Length: 185
Image (cartoon, rainbow, N blue to C red):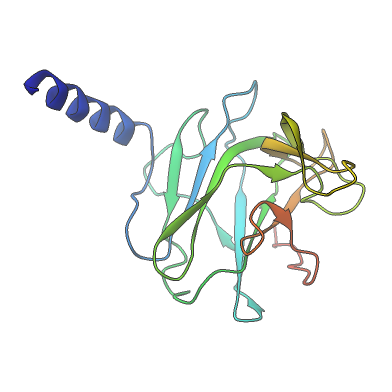
């Protein structure tokens, strides 16, 4: 049993070293960077939250003194602590041409952190295909025209997907009812 506790403590220390920021009960955005080739980014990544019928301001995702958005890391961004009501959507915008990919997205559900682990291929809008690593046999609609993916990719050039708008009420789907615009890059 002591060996188990020691291993668990070691795992927790390693997990903390592979992330920036921390998970709390405050409204926090969490992003797990995928481990596909070139998934990490040093470019400016911005986020905006849709809550109670309005979009927040665009906010730069950057934890001071930490190397955010590195392959395999889960980073927590507390720039949204002022949005204490349930989040209805999260918009992410990559201002750079070096792409960034995410496996998981954590968002504030009004009481704590909830996670989205599968995404629809069209989360950047009609005709945009930002999905990476298709989930075999899973689709976002009954006619199997929109596949589910375990990660998404955003950048300014490769797939022309600088923006994704992720519905949190229908997790992983595109929120099409409201346009978040784009940040000043």
